[in-house]
Length: 383
Image (cartoon, rainbow, N blue to C red; front, side, top):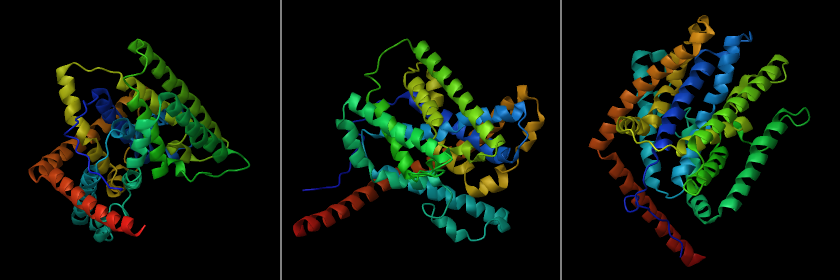
């Protein structure tokens, strides 16, 4: 007989990988910098390919990997268990920020919010594409996780190589070939739940076999990964500039999460950080503090009202600085956004703990699963 299951993580608590937790912070930092470049500086409006602009394009190639890193981390840590209460918790958190920020702008800038009621539905109406895609993907994970647990290392590696060849390499060729010029697999540059599932498989591979991988010198691994990141980003940057200069493409190339370069860069970061054994106690406390706040930072700074009213075109002024100072200034601005959003989300986290939102989500999850099992019982009586 088929039953939906509720898995309690407290029974088999898995030791956290602090390297992966630190990678969450790096990933959200990358995403903030990408948004500053793409929306704030509006690099897609700048056709003067000076060294400064090329430098921003080069860094943006690396920053774009932040989304893929988050997707891979989901697979790295998530394949061991599946708990619907986590999804309900994220839904609560997304709703709070989606509606709360809209309410703030409705009070302070009434003309910026046409219909406040639309923000009651973050899953369907708002601009949080990642949450919508993750929500859709989540219902496939129980089956996906079962497959990841059963498959062997070689078979899993071959499988990932095949989907990389098809959905990244071949898809990139077809997208920019003179004959096809289309998105064959409907991945929409990675803005879809299908792409998140693919990233989940990548992350699941490295998460499952992380302890079984070869124990080479960590410095050599770090050096090789950094070299791959810089070389791949440079090649990608050259291709982007040449295609845009020749009018064979537009600046949508800057946000192609499905590109082979973005996948390779993300994998390099996963390999590097998953091998780091952090022992310095103050650093462990810092990582432990900021890591749970990263999703809140994403929700806060990437709300479409925040993006339109606070970020868009507001950072073009950094281009007046010399290239030697440009990146430091951008990092300083992104750090301010990160710290401010983390500060707000910390109080949201405290509020959720006081109101026991996590326990409420677990209770709702149990109720939903029991209702589902009731329907399955009657279905099996008929079929």
